[in-house]
Image (cartoon, rainbow, N blue to C red; front, side):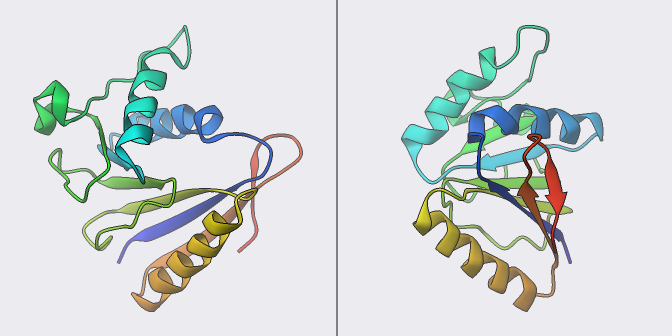
Length: 149
């Protein structure tokens, strides 16, 4: 089964954390799919990741860029996994596929959005019921994450 992590944002935005998390995944040699809850959000993340930090390059693409299988980080609002990713990020209330084929699933949810919290609780229950090892990370006052469960 997969390891499934839940990142609870309380102070920062998705954009302020996802670049670093994606870099850490690539540093480990993993390929990644980032699944968003909408096409608009996928496109916004695509634009953001090109400029998220001046001193770094985060290789990524979408279906419209082509060569999906070659993308180290593939952005989608669907269920596909064309780059044979090891890790699947789920953002903006994306409804996940079966996470069993992945080494890791990562939910990032906004604690200031009540529906996102409700959805995260549902996904937690689903992941545990499926036998995945689940952990919960809450944003702390210093901007990092503390393991709470």
